[in-house]
Amino acid sequence: MESGVLPWSADNRQPFDSCVGCRACEPACPSGVRYGEILELARSRLERVAPRKQARLLLDVVTNPVLFRLQAGLASLVPGLKAPRWLARHLTPEGQRAEVPPLRRVAEWPPLESAGLPPVKADVALLEGCAMKVLFPDVHEATERLLRRVGIGSVRIKGCCGALHAHAGFLEKAHALALRLTKQLGPDRQLVVNSAGCGSWLKEAGLPVLDATVFLAAHGLVQALRTSRGLSGTVATYHDACHLAHGQGVRTQPRELLSAVPGLRLVPMVESDTCCGSGGVYNVLQPRLAQALLDRKWSNICLTGSQVVVTGNPGCLAWIEQASRRAGGSPTVQHTLSLLESSFSGLLDNI
Image 1 (cartoon, one colour):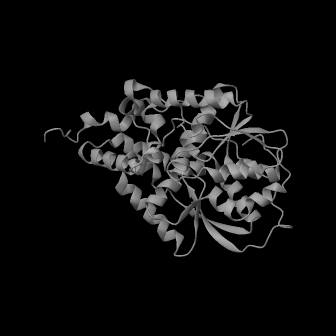
Image 2 (cartoon, one colour; image 1 turned 180 degrees about the vertical axis):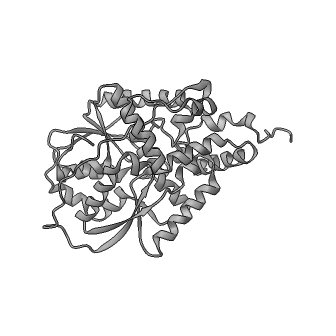
Image 3 (cartoon, helix red, strand yellow; image 1 turned 90 degrees about the vertical axis):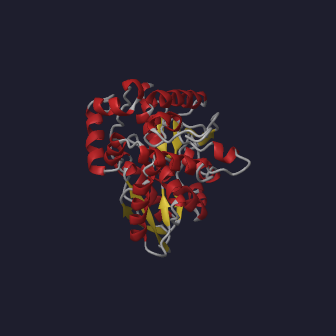
């Protein structure tokens, strides 16, 4: 070993594993160090010298909609279902086990009436992905409906983008998955994403991607919302998903859209951009540290007195919903785009 240089080995994995990868250090860094990319490269190097086969298996399950839907479906039948013991034994400190997020009931939006909608002036590609597709299918439908309300058609791009693999250090697989999306996208179609982690990774991979809130705010949704039926008497607060606020620098547009909803009172949250502890699969790999972050986030949510907490990432949604379920289901947790569509269609009980 060179003087002062630690060897790349499993013995030195702990500092890299305990970092949630929230990237909050990046906007604070005066030198502009892109720590998130450095962390992914370090984890990739560790995987080459000390591979974790079980971690790769976990990712293969979570990013496979068929397998993940089966696991989440079991969690819906058995509330509080934990990750399998063999997984906890191999992946988590002291054999701790994280809960498996259950499937939601599919939101039944009323039919979207074409009368009064603007003509379609362009089409975009909407990433279907993996976790969002399984856990929050209502978000994709809400995104498509909002796009159509501002005269934009959409075509779904299927498949995992590789974000979870990238965050965990499986960069070769992550780049292969991103390349597969590129081939579906075509040369001229804008890619719109409603998952913060996916959008952040795809930007790093060089794809022409915009978060849905950014795209919709730029295409007239603020004005459309101001004339919608609204959400009278609803009090909400906003949690900044790490890969949206820190990874992509998107903070203004979600709040601008929410503030345009008639009757909705948006209450600021203390530490709104502090990580909730989800971190891709961090809450499975480091459940004790992730739970501490979730407890802190939930305390700040409750201090707002809100009925609903809104955010833009499936990992945050699923993780914060665990705290909501333990608290009896209040405040509820919704994706930003589902709440915005509710301003037109009515707030649904099952989203």
